[in-house]
Length: 335
Image 1 (cartoon, rainbow, N blue to C red):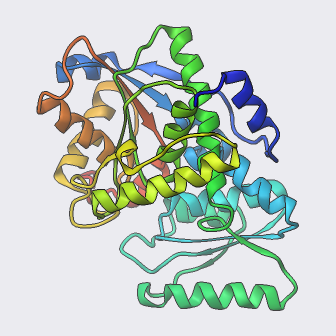
Image 2 (cartoon, rainbow, N blue to C red; image 1 turned 90 degrees about the vertical axis):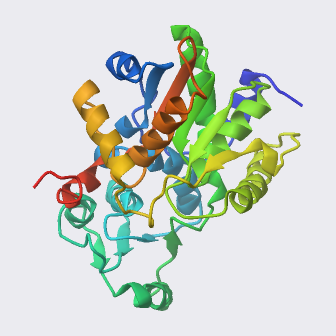
């Protein structure tokens, strides 16, 4: 059952929130890219401009998620992922902004140079560990245990209060809807890089408002599309529960494609490399090597396949991640 925007706004405003992001993020037309591709008109929603630590969608998500950490009295923010993790960089920055300790457990992978996201995490004062990939999980577990033994209350930004990352993009759906109305944009689809939380929040927000917009996710990681949709639906039901939304949510509500990942997460493909160069050269807009370039490659492939044509409109959600570019010069053909 759909509710009004005012009622949804009231439910969101009743939740703990940190106000850190530069919102609303702008929507801009990509006229040269649209003309070059000869398909639909493309707009970009600039979630890479959320402000803190060179921006990205995690800053919006953290407003609701890390508010839960503050409510619980947590004093350490922990994150663990690849060496060039955007979320690790943003975790370290938000910890610095809140006066908390940050611990980053990356891994000694192919991009563990002290530049890009890893450099920024260190500049923000994070305690950084880079174990071998096979030792990473054990190092994280040991570090969490050691922090607790020292009297700290750690909060892992990947897993703790994770549903609130999707709640944040219910808020984002309200923002997007208002902006599209103000600018006279009627999207035939919204494209984004879909791990889980941003995609789920947008779908829950739009369904909660009774807005029938197609949301298309492009996965940054190898996965089974049906299993991903089932996981998204489960998270969506949890998100709807937080906001007391009476929604029927099923895997069929989630459209995502893992066919543009390539060999693995974080590995540049010929298609993502071409998409990244094309957008930079046509629009002066930087995508990133792991997420948005693969999402754009997916959109371009779908345009080439005839799924989207002239007269239609696409909004591309730029989720950020551009600091990682500096560790990928060789793969991008820029050395």
